[in-house]
Image (cartoon, rainbow, N blue to C red):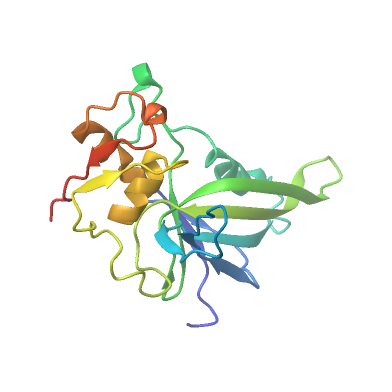
Length: 219
């Protein structure tokens, strides 16, 4: 990676690059897997069962400075703050059912490309102002969560996205459709596939002991 490469963000639905101005000194990425170890009265530790991969997360701190031009630094930070707002222009938006979301972003720095991620939290601090009160320097702390399956930062679970060959599942105490989806598809967001196959209108009403048909994921 060349030292002159500048990091930038690309926002979903836009070809514009949002420059980071100053490259971050650190970039933290983490991933987690879900395991379930049921407890049974009168028995010892039970064998843990893998229940799915959790979304990756990323955090970074950025600095923006416009003291050389005297223009408000908000021309950059305002675009970052807007990443927290719902964007009705994105595909799949249905205002009647309140099905809308903010855009995802990808972080780029030289040969490094992040997974598509949504901003879960953002903290903005203005640290320098002009004599007339124009903000000229700011620090931004961002936390992002992986939006969907990706091979960014290295290969992921090779079975992720491949359904379990079992076609029938008995709901266990405390299980939810998203956890069942994560177990069979490696993706908790595919729970609607199971709900649709079983005629479930309310995903929170699935009772323990219910037999569910688990449809195969199309190739």
